[in-house]
Length: 83
Image 1 (cartoon, helix red, strand yellow):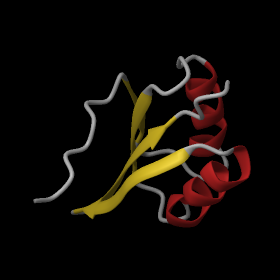
Image 2 (cartoon, rainbow, N blue to C red; image 1 turned 180 degrees about the horizontal axis):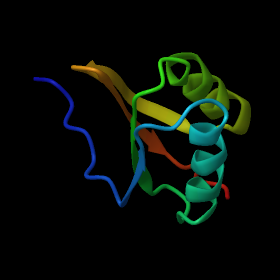
Image 3 (cartoon, rainbow, N blue to C red; image 1 turned 180 degrees about the vertical axis):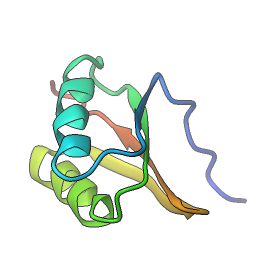
């Protein structure tokens, strides 16, 4: 049985924005989350496929899901439980 993903606590709509704006906005959005909360990110910039996983890895956040939906990229990120 597939693992069910948590419902996002917040959403960041970065559609139509180009690098580096989506990651800059992501940094601010994650800062506003409580430890362990989840953020859904919607983007159209293909560079987010590289930048968002690197962002999560570097800062210790968990990338729960990364998928391409039509011309959009959807991510589900869980904030590091220590911060």
